[in-house]
Image (cartoon, rainbow, N blue to C red; front, side, top):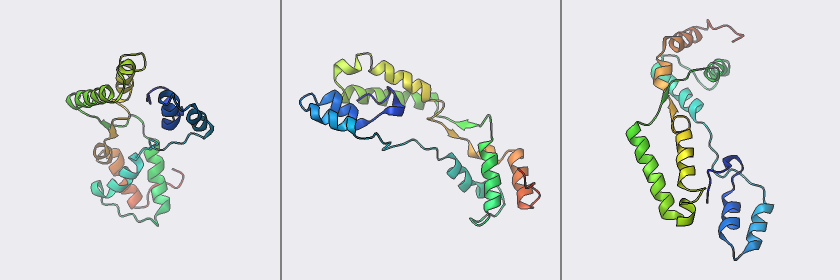
Length: 164
């Protein structure tokens, strides 16, 4: 089942039923009639991890009731540009790619992984995502920066302007 082709409209059930269940065409029709849903959507955990890490890198004490301050922090977080990232080392990138390729070979018919949709598509998709989706933000580098330390200190002292 090729999940790399058109990932925004991917349905495992439809792709499997229509592509691999030749003896049961009614299953394909049934799968197509059901709305596709993201059973494993890729949601960024960056904000949640960032929020939970603030107290590790700054003395500011915030509770859930400090909604105004949290909102200012969240706005600043989402307005960041040139965000430092932590990515896999080239050695680990190669290992992960090899494991992915080995799994594709083991789990798919030879005609598929040697065909147009096969391994070359997986390699291309992997290369596209290796330095973006397979990276995380460098929370330590962000929160220890003078910009964020100063911002949190000012916020702690209630000096941050209301209109942020």
